Image (cartoon, rainbow, N blue to C red; front, side):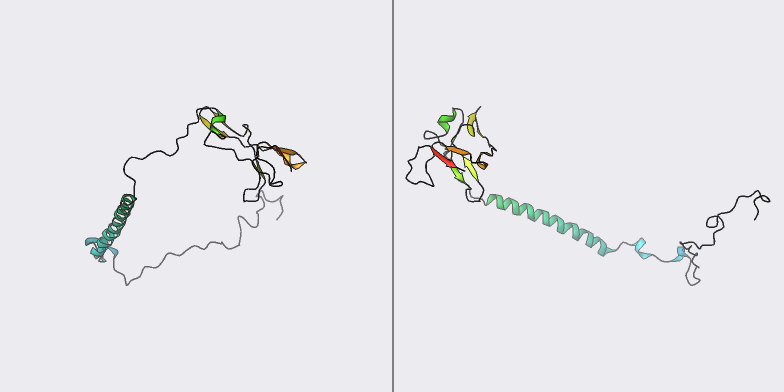
Length: 183
């Protein structure tokens, strides 16, 4: 086709005049069966009369669920009541008030002591505990445990265990002596 003779634009082959079949097929309308009666004349007895078994199933389901809730509440109450309690006057074993200074709470005069040790305490990690008041102290009525994350033990640092009660490397060492543990 010569462009000079026609003013119409060229047609693109796969759009307007495509002969490629459609990927979605149109459904043909279904032929109506001549054996069926008119839908208004078909009997539907379930519309006029409710099924008694459906009602029984409904109430049975919710009834069993309600009985389960009641049984669990009764079991909880009876379990609560069956816990033995001590009746009568009870005395307090330990009433620790941290209203004094650090030295009266920790140490020989107090109820608490600081553990002084180098070791893993059973789980294989390396820990250092000291008697320093920088790590555990009393302030404003509370006991504070401060964890120090120092890496002193890595480069030949001498860690001072003041007031160590036992020396693992020298059992003859007296308690209270200063021990320098080489890490």
